[in-house]
Image 1: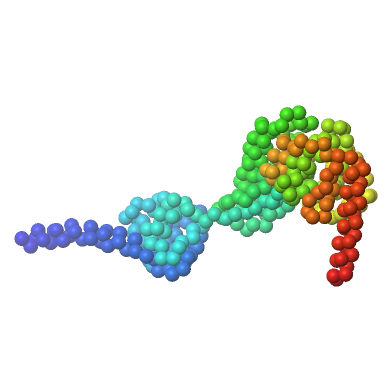
Image 2: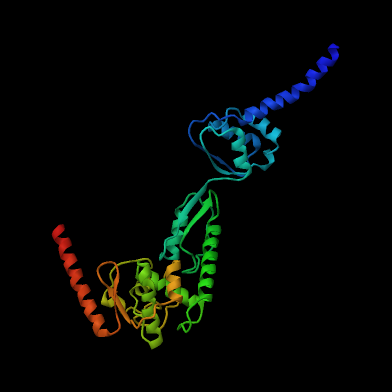
Length: 325
């Protein structure tokens, strides 16, 4: 019966076409090297397909759109920045977009930097968007490497850094050593920022903390050089003069008693832990030892000897530098 054969062919044609399209949707793509495609929010399916074809990720925009309708994933495609490996099939391209597997970028906030320095890092990134309504409080941004997608708001990243600091500070404070001479996590954060500024050696931080804690208990001034610098020029690392130590400002711990009114930077976790778990020592003084660390002392006489050694070593190093020039 010729009529029946024709009817069967007509019925089989769509199924065959779908099978061929499905197979074409899964064969390797034309690109022999990795490609990146940026899809802005609000881009239509046709616009997405055109971008992919222009980037050489797919062979045909029309075939891609037809495949999206067949597989019913077109409505799930998400805007973003996508990195595709060489020869990725149209199916793999569509699945990555449907799952929102856009490229993650990273940005690092360094321990000890001030909030202004940290915000400047965020502002220099052309991958972030928007501006901050206000400057975050000093010490409120946890230093870490943060991952984000292109177009993420700067305010959102700041919120993540602040939430991380709040979380870690609360956890550290909950497990603090007993009988600390300060009574709030905010005060511990201030001390942690001073510890961070005083040493880059993680092993020294509990001992630096002990010096400050012992001085607070005795009512001694903390005499921390970084606090003086912060009150004059936040973020500076220049040498202090005797005149600088006499400057009147709220952070000059050579003049004020107790902790300064705010942190002087964003401390890392090691410094926060040191502030709530200071070492058990009688140290009251420390000075640089010329090797990147510090010499500690329990008496002023011992400290003065350490200072004299440091000054001698510094003069020798300066003389050697002049000779080398």
